[in-house]
Length: 278
Image (cartoon, rainbow, N blue to C red; front, side, top):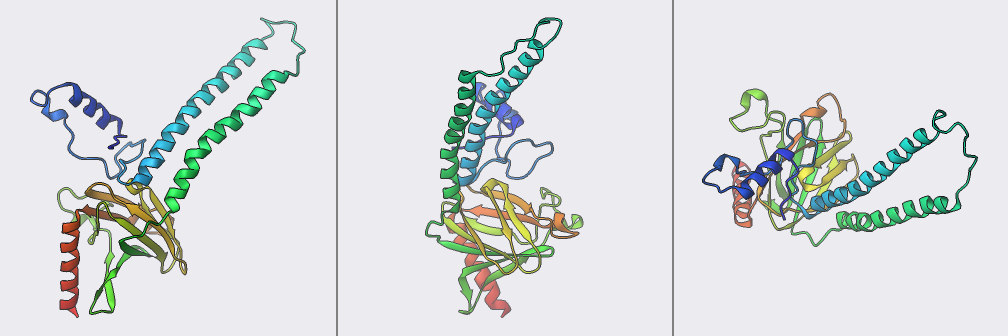
């Protein structure tokens, strides 16, 4: 299932649904928003089941929020209106209402129970590590990331590892995103369970990838882990989400999600390059 959370993209999608492509080709969209956009107010398009669950839970809670907000403001309006001296010069001395007090005590409890069921299910799903096929170790530094593919060793000892720095503006090419592009991207396969092990070498960092629904702290001397299951190919952008110093805003993250065959070729190329440099 594909979600479109950007209002402009949703409008174009609806237009393309009711008009033939020959007459309105310019309305057709070919890419999902896997990076932040100017004036964006919603979520980025999900690429993992966890992020889809987060968006669904958000939409469910928004329903209750609208209903509760409407009732609350209506009650405030009625109170202000009912206690207007010009309309009701003699105030009602009623101070208790057993029925209404029971209702407004039980109703919120029921609402919280309804919200808790999908919320707990999502929390347990986010903590579940399902027999990962690939392990990626992520190490935060001031101010760059180091990635290690621990499942593949060069010369039987060292894993595939590389540093990832933000590209300066003068090195950007056409199509690159300013402050979000890096010199070495992560490459991961789709439809594969991947375990992320996250730590830091100096101060607190946070590896955040909105399209994956992942935001995990990188703590010095501690290993945090989570898992992802990418459902579609694409290029995904994230950033460090923990204030870690003067260059905190210059620690982008870029993930290339490819099919399994391309991923195998990428790993083989990395191993060959590493062996040649030894």
